[in-house]
Amino acid sequence: MAMLTIIASIAISTLNPTARALDNAGREMASNLRLARAKAVATGYHYQVTVSSGSYAVNKMVLSSGNWVVDTATPTRTVTLPTAVTVPSVPSAAYEFDSRGNCAGTSAPCLTAASSITLHHSSQNRDLTVTVWPSGQIY
Image (cartoon, rainbow, N blue to C red; front, side, top):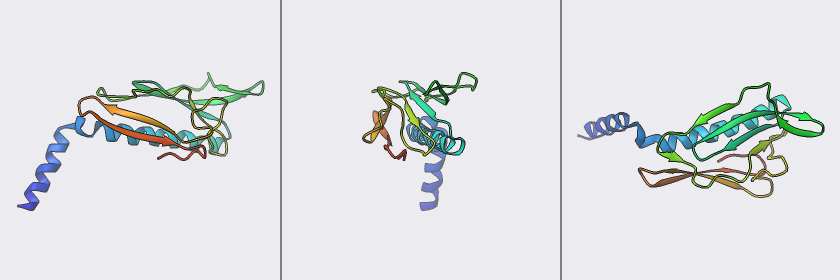
């Protein structure tokens, strides 16, 4: 009987992909923030992640006249959130990671304290938080 219950629960969760949409979107966002940080450390360039209500964009940055700016020669990687998932309170500025993996830039929300990005699933009325620390760590 227990085996039947386990199989049924797996089948139900597989049939309803929206049930895991928020968790998957949160994991994907955290992974992309970590990837941007890792690329910054590996390449020596800054990387920027700009969050909007329904998507986020990852950009490589280059040094131009003493300032880090988005590299227009490198394509932007835009990730669209699942339909029912949004960011209700968009961060005031983009997250930027430097070559040491730290949060950087002049106005990044994670410069002096941990900054949280809250994802909200409208159908489930559930939230999930991704936190970026000044050290660049993401949870």
